[in-house]
Length: 336
Image: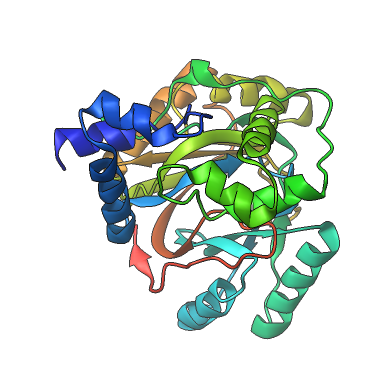
């Protein structure tokens, strides 16, 4: 990867300009003309380095979502993974090193649709799906530092969600649907979105600013695909923390600068006793394990029961699609 491509992918994952011609300033900073920048973004998208240029939404602020896990007999794993990945509600689907070996995220417009999707998956596969919805987030996705051996972001950039939820109107939902697969890679993307949903460019900019200010959108910018950019190891570490202490330790993990994501999720006893989850992505397994060791020491987690579930294969990875638009999936399983 060239230095210019690295700067483009690394430095513009958040803070995307809310101006009529957002790509102009980026092109100027990189010393490119506008068409050269747009051509580069289109090519990197085709090659798989970029998922999209656009919004990453905070979980459960637009629609609903849950993490789910299945214990799949080894001989059926490919078959079941194909069935799960075929669901438009599923945006991430991974094999992990555990008895619960298939982990996926499902999203929908409302709880009833999500419940129906999970029920349909269980009926199709004949297997139970353990639901693990987010209870509390301690660290949210703020991008991916491509210059480090472990893809982490600046812990100080995270902004707390407002205490009062923003009520979305019909045009807000139309905007979310229009941009959930990314902004168009044209000189005036917001004008094109505005024409599609029947409003003005200025109104789109105001609405996006409000969604960002209220934490509905976590970040706006380039969304990279970490696997294609060399971060081929990822681990989900889980701990069993006493309920009275989980917020304390969750905040420590979230503020550590050592994780990509950190959430509290419910236990599902007796099969699943863990309630604190974090994710770390790295260039190799050793780099991830080294960061986990630092995390245990830094936050005093060594005394609590823990499991580390490395991913083995990626069956599907897209952005979350909460509304009507259908996702473009990763077509085949890949090791990760």
